[in-house]
Length: 389
Ligand SMILES: *Cc1c(COP(=O)(O)O)cnc(C)c1O
Image (cartoon, rainbow, N blue to C red):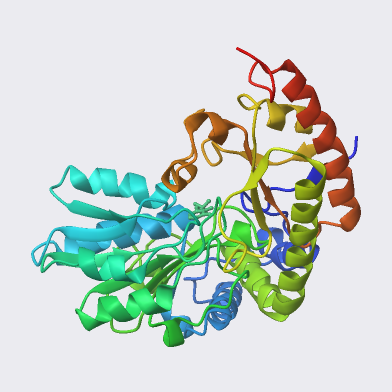
């Protein structure tokens, strides 16, 4: 059966060029990067190169890049580390209602240790008002963490402005840039970012590798105690093939940036136009400006539960629904809820995310099947337009 993958925000396939770079580091160049003989030095050189490639994508220096096990790990490191390091100065952290669970659930953990949180609201278009940041700051605030790009509705947030506000009060600024990396321009120096989380598998690299950018001069408490890896801050023998893959993926993301953005946004806009024109009772969530180039989040009214995802899957089409990122629970998305979308409508909401391997033909196929699926489900639904209870 045909497969149309429209869930690039959940994960991406590893690009062939990335895999090819990685392969030698499994069976041939398997040295431990801490060893001083030739194969060890070879592995060390490979790590150095990957660190440069990742640094270059965000205009950091290689010494400011710390490889981790995933984006979630980087987020955990920042919150727990800042809490430990600055807890004696204050117990207040500012973040947003629409962060990834890697942030929100770490906040829950820190609440049990006496930390207090302000969750900045989003408006009906998914935007954060920097003035709200200013208002939320108290003399106990030690960290502000605002995601660069939201993973469900794709909103790009004004982190440069927010970082400026943070620094004017001497507060650390972190951004979860997992969804932004490779999709919006990132320059940590220009944007004044102190800490930034990344993940390889969202940019055509392998799963299980992430990184934290930590501005020079800043030292969060060490994450894993042990050997001298990652400058002593995150011990454990490095995942050399994974890190090499992350490096290559970062290099490609930089080289292909303009093409990637143009391709994704063209197909995304085409999908949006066709859905609006051909399917009644739909609503696009979030704003179309300042948005992830490949993201489209659509509510289909009069559709119950996760049925739309399951029927699309029968046609080989992969998308996420309003309970995205927690597909095992049917808990409605906290992001859509924060936008003011009702629980019922959240379950009829689909996130399409488009990437480098998506074709126009994929979109045409998707729209054709989507029309069928939506029509069929609305016929079955007691809630359908014009139907009485
Ligand atoms: C995917 C994602 C993460 C988690 O990254 P992992 O590498 O899967 O742990 C964190 N934040 C955002 C915004 C994401 O989209």
